[in-house]
Image (cartoon, rainbow, N blue to C red):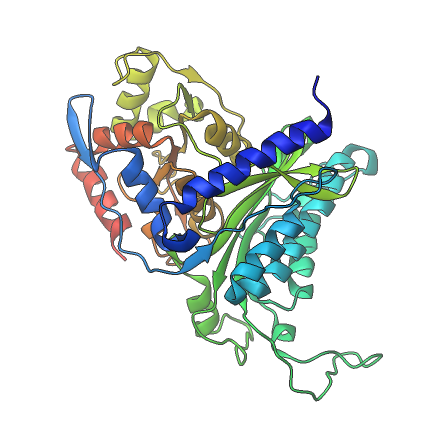
Length: 453
C-alpha cells in the first residue's frame, strides 16, 4: 500500500489540476461566485429536460457578480497537506475583502472540533438523553436533547469571540441574537463591560445562521449527526441595533436573506470520520479531521455530484401523505419506469447532514418533502435548506421545493419551513417534471404562494 504522504501528494496534485482546469472558465483564474451555480447547472444539462414524457424547465434567478479568486497551492507540506486554516489564509490573501471571513471560519472550525469531541464522548460523559430529564422545548416545539443545548452554546460563543459576527440565528434560539461586542473596541483588562477608548477597525460584520446539531436524536444510537451553517454579509450596519423584548427591524432584515446572498456555507459531519464540507462560491470542498495534528485536511477537493444517481432517500413512512406527483415519481424509480429505465435503491439515515453527504458523493436524490401533516415541509429555510442548497449547487447539483429553486426564496421569518428535494441535477429535474404535469389546484396554488416573495 502507498504511504500516507504518497496518498496525500496524489490528492493534492489532483486538486491543483482541478483548480487549473476550473480557472480556464474564468478570466485570470476568477470564479464568479453568484453565477457559478447557475453556470454549472447549465453546463451539466440543457435548460429543458424531457422526463417521463413531460418537459420540465427551471428558471434560475439573476444574481450578482461578486467574485472570489480560488486559492492555488504550488507548495505543500507532505506531512500536513492543505489544512482548512491554510486554505482560509490563502483565500484571504487573494481576496482581501474576505480577510475577516478567515477569523470567522477559525471560530466555526474550532467549535466543530469541540462538538466532535462532545459527540464522541457523549455516552461516557452522560451527555445523552433529554435536557432536564425531558420537557425542555425549543421554539420549534421540539423536545431538546442535552447536546442540543450544549452545542448551541459552543457555537454561539465561538462566533461571538471572533468579533466578526453581528447577529447569530440558531435553531435553538427563539429570535436572532445580537452581538454588540462586535462593534466595540478592545475590552479594558479587569474592567467587566468596559472598552478601551481607541479607534478600532471593526472590519466586516457577518450574520451567521446554524443548526448546531442536526440529527441530535440519533446521538444515543451512534448514528451520524452534523452541524450546518451559513454566513451572510450585513445589508446595513447593525451597530445601533438594540433588542429589548423583541427583535429590532434591522436585525431581522439582515437575517432574513435569500440563499443567493450567502457568502459561504457548510456542514461538519460527525461519523466514522469527522468531515468539514465548505463552499465560498467557487466549488465545494471537503476536509477530514486529522486528530493527530488537530486540523481539518483537504481530502475531497472540488466535489462534483454525479449528474444522475441510482439512490433515492426519503422517509417512506410518510409516503401516502406526500403530494401525488412525488408518489408517482418514487413509484417510477422503484419499478424502473423512470427516465433511465433502471430501478433505484433506497437509502435513508434520518440525519440531513449524513444523507446530503452521501448524495453529494454518490448522486441520486434526497428529500424531506411536504405532506398532509406538514404542507410546508419540516426543514428550516434559513439555516438548513438554503446553506445545504448552496453547497449542492456549487457541486453541480440542484435543490428545489418541488418546483421552486430554494436558493431564490427569501425567508419571511427566522424559523420558516420549506420542502426540500435535492441532489443530482437530472434526477431533481425529472422529479420536477411530475410537479409540472400536476393539475391539482391546491398543489399549484401552494407552489405559486411559496415562490412569491
